[in-house]
Length: 277
Ligand SMILES: [Zn+2]
Ligand SMILES: [Zn+2]
Image (cartoon, rainbow, N blue to C red; front, side, top):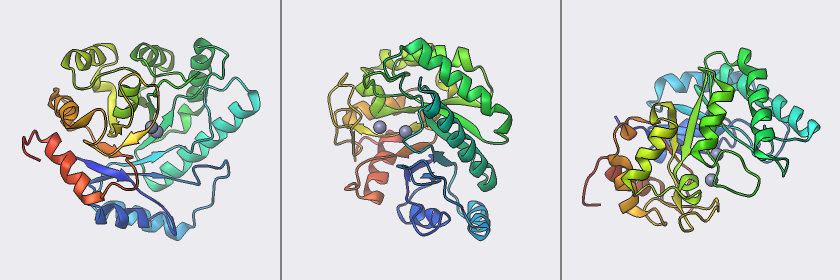
């Protein structure tokens, strides 16, 4: 069964995310656990936690994925940012465990001009410092679009990170928009084979399914609704046709304007290889 959903809001109570996701026609969902634009971790009342755990049993929405807030930078060369980032990661893991959330997506971060090697070393150090806390939660490291100083936009970087981190509780989340922005043409089978060879789709536990607003190799992280961007229906058809891809869960982080249920229908048709949309 195809697992496909949106990043949904947790406004007015984290357990309401399930209702929103269901309304949009989701069979999987992603949430932030806290304000994504701040450092502060807000307290979640016990009854909200209980309601969330209850709904994760009664709603057929899985997996539930949590996404780290935007400010933490696990590759940061700045000591204070680095330690605050680790604290944030720990707090997010703690909440994931309380809520029974399986995957926590974290961006690879930015080396801020100090060089990729240093950034990757910091990231590996950050991950190893939280390994004992993970419990049933896995960290999924997300590829970047190739913005200045970012690490992890190339498959070489990702496989190097994999070598440095070497934990069974860490795998990858690949964002299709970021891949395309970083120069990987998903509509080309040879490119998919190369990605598969270099990091192995078996190590990818989740896809962020986003079309790209700008052209191949733009390095710009701007999402577009599925089929309306530069990857387009043709690119996604090729992508979904690649062996094993369909068995992964997909989370869309497409612009607000995307009509939920309609976009789910389009993405489902593309994923199932239905020629006519
Ligand atoms: Zn992300
Ligand atoms: Zn993005």
